Image 1 (cartoon, rainbow, N blue to C red):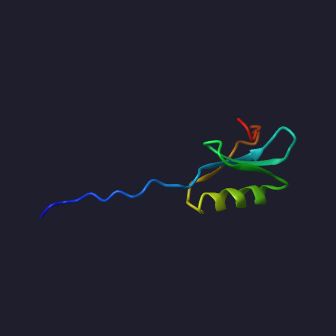
Image 2 (cartoon, rainbow, N blue to C red):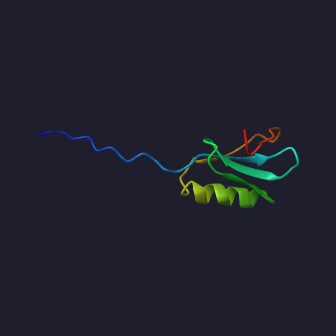
Length: 73
C-alpha cells in the first residue's frame, strides 16, 4: 500500500497585533501591512482582528503596554 501526503492549502488568514498608538488610540494591524485600522476601544480592535483572521487561534496578539504601534510600520 502506498502512502500519500495530503497537504493543506496555505492559510489565507492574517496574523494581527493589537495595541495603542502614541495618541492612545487602539490599532489593529496585520504583520504583512496589508490591512488594519484605528479604533476607539480595545474590544473593537480585537473584534476586527479576530474577524479578519477568520477567528483562528493564535492569530491575534496584544502588544506590550509600553509599546506604541503605528498603522504604517
